[in-house]
Structures are given as structure tokens and as C-alpha cells.
Length: 480
Image 1 (cartoon, rainbow, N blue to C red):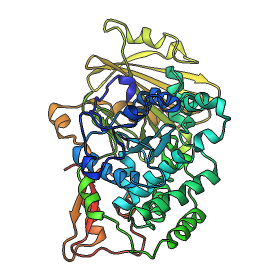
Image 2: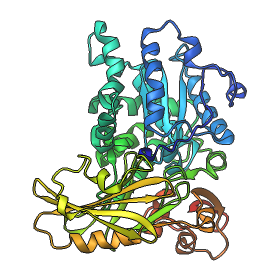
Image 3: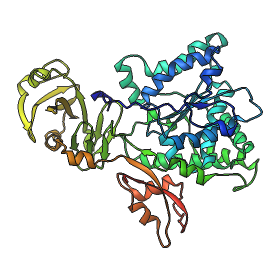
Image 4: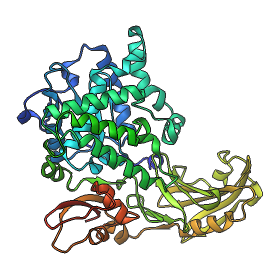
């Protein structure tokens, strides 16, 4: 929740180069695209955008064994004889969104959310090889003439990030398109990527498998209308049954299913313990409750509402087009909450509606506003030296505003030390299926996720009719 100015500083995991596999491990002085392409104009411009991408995606994710696993996959792909001089820097982004993309100059990015969805090294290799194909094919600069290279390279990020807070808010609601290639370019990258992973000895059918997992993920999240699709792979990489079929057709040119290396055990060992979903710095969504262990506050939305913890604020959408927004601001500790509400940031404020209240022992002010066919309940709460804003919006004709706003408002509370300590982030855990254990049993062990059985199937790439067997290793989500 960036609006309350909590940040997480993570160590670097810059990997790259075309060294041998033994050299591809986390290092304090790695060989990267930064060190081998200093004189490349495009790489230099992309390098300038790198910090802004990190800011958008929560920084870099640091986990030595995960970095080592990803580095080995990248290393096996950079040994491609067709492109012996191309170097890459790959960054693992600390984001739960499922995304991978490339910038001119060999900058590759993959989110921890994507790593959680993949099921073996071959699938990860397929994603990375696809992005490498965009770089080696110069897809990013084919859309412009040669003299406009600098403009394109900077616009890849400038157009979507901007430099002011308003641009960042716009980004969170559908403006990010970091890999917006044409359909033909996407299909070309698929074909090149599948050839590359087959040449590296990986299962060429991995690309189609991962695309099927993405389709399952998309179907599962489609019930949540508040999910921010703009930061996900699916927003910039078209996915359709026809594309999966084309991937299968390309794969058949290199062998039959099972003919290549999947390297599943190494991959699962690498992602075991991977952070899943929100970080403690962002707060946690647990069902209909949002809890922030660092700030020490929580609130709950009514039945039928779904919470989305995005970069700009925590929002929730529910029946009847009613929405809730929660964020935090810093104001003078001696300032009156009533005067703050009158400060001009509330459009259509009804001054006569402002009234001081107390919410679970916390000083607060409630007010009403109307603007452009909507009615709003505005609640401002002072707790722990911070000021929080709860805004509930409903269509002007709705009669449910007060009921919803009252439930949300009255649910706000500060957490005890014991409650804050007990809140743990969710992680991917790899477990071994025991004799007689069913998919339903395994799914029931998961915490912090909705539709557990469907989520379990999606995470493990299991079709509706699939089963598990004793000794099989699978992923579950837990806070342990």
C-alpha cells in the first residue's frame, strides 16, 4: 500500500551473461548486460528505466536458491549458438502479478508470481526464451524507424509510468503495457522460444503447458472483477486455444511429449518457500478482511465484496456497484480531522454532514458527499499517529450506502501485538503426497486463498480429471 509510504528494500539479483553454468550464480559482482554493453545506446536507455520498473513491481526479490535456479535456466538458454554475443540481465521482481517482459538491450524481467505458477524448469525456460526472442528479433524497434530508437526505448516505460503520482495511479488501473507486441510478433517469439528450449534439451511442450496454466489462472480470477489485469502477463501476451495449439504444433517438430527434460525437482526445490501474494509491507487480504501487520490496523468488508490490494490503495467491489477504498495519509498531528475533511480533497462535500465520531476507541470524522451521479460516505480515522481514509461509493439512487459504510467503518480496529505477530505472509510450499491422500485433502491444507481446490489444480497444472499419487510432489499455499 504505497500511499502509507512503507517500502521494502531488497538485495539485488542481477543475473546474466553467457558464462558457463557454474558461473551463473548470485554474485556481488555479476557479469551483466550493464557491464558488457556500456556503449550500446539502446541498452543505456533501457538501463535508465530499470529503477522505475523496480519501483512499479515492488523491487527485486532476493532468495539465493531461487536466483541460482533461475540463473541456471537462463544460462542454458544463453548458450544458443545462433546468438553467441547477446547478453542478458534478468531480474526477479517482487510482485505477485504473473508477468515477464523484456526491454531493448537484453533486460529481462520475471515476477515471483509467474514463478509460483510455473511447474518445472522447462516451463520457466519457455517463458524466458519467449522474451529473449523479442530481444533478438528486435521486435521493440521494428515499430519505429532506426532514427527513433531512443524514443521507442524510453517510451516503453515512459508512456506508462510517467513521473508524477497521477501517472502512477493511472498505471494501476490499466495503463501498463510493457510488452505490447503485435500478434504476429508474439507468435514468432513463441516459435523461436520453443526452438530454443528444445535445442537446450528442455521439453518443447512446456510452452503449451504454461499457456494452459495461464488460461486456468485467468479463468479462476475472472470471478474477481477488482483484479488489476494491467500488471499481468495476460494483459500484454494474448492467450487463446489457437495459440496453445500452435505451440503444440511447433513442439511436435522437436519430439513427442516426455522426450525433453522438465527438470521438475530442481525447479520445485528453487521455489519452495517463495513468497505468495502480498508482502507484510503491503498488508494481507484474508477473505473479506484486510490486515496490515506493520501499520497495525484492519477492516472487514461485507459479504459479497472482494478486496483488491493494489499499489495505490486497498479497494473492494460488491453488489450494486458499491465500492470501498482505503488508504493512508500523513497530516499534522495537531490538525483537526474535521478541518482536514474540509480541505478540498473531497468533491461534492456536504459540509453540514461532517460529524466527529469514535470508532473502536479511535478518533474519527464522518461526512457525506455527492458528485456526478454518485454518493459517498467519507470516514477519516486517526490511529497510531497515522490518518486513514475509508471512502464508500454507491450510485446516487442506491439505498445501501449507509448500511455498507457503517459495516466497514465499525469494523476498523487497531491490532494487538499478539495479532500483529501472528500474521504471517503466504508462501509456496512443496509437499509430498502421502498414500491415500486426495487432491481435496491437499487443498484443505491451504490457507489464505479462496476456492482452494480450484486454486490447487491451477497452481499444479492439473486438469479437472487429473489425480495425484503417493510420492508425487505438489505445491500448496500456506503461512507456515
